[in-house]
Length: 215
Image (cartoon, rainbow, N blue to C red):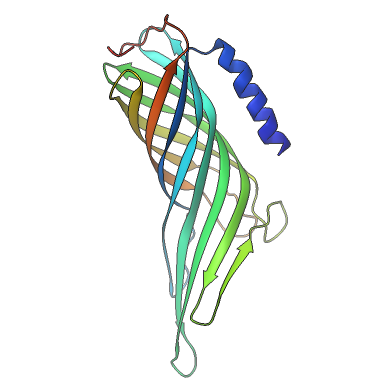
């Protein structure tokens, strides 16, 4: 929690010097990169993201963007097995983790289109594992830490994206987040996500030099 408060202080102190403020949100499709075992299958988890970003221009066609983004990532898992009497057992698991992510993207503008790429750092806030079988269903909170059976709170990765400026204040984006570190203390967990976003811009300066005709 202290890390999140510190990130908020840093973000809002830099708003004073930024040239663009925006709110964004949208749909997230993610997985955790689990290696399925015998009888197991994995699939992507549907989630969402929402947050605030600020932007700075660097010359006529380049910019920099950072902010605070809440994003939910995870994965679905299904285990199918049979007992000694050939009775079917199906166990479904839904693993979800909520993060606060800080993107650090450099942007390139060409008319209404822009490309962005850069690292991100994310901190896990909470997580759960929902298990459902033919007999019952349970919800268990994920434990975070560095002990066996726990998941690390820190995630580092790289983002790539492309956006299209629809109007002076609105753009649509598609991006992907690629986790670069293993968050598990036992298995292999590396977050992956595909994000579809709508962004609404609030220009804070009339002196921006971006190449888009809407700026």
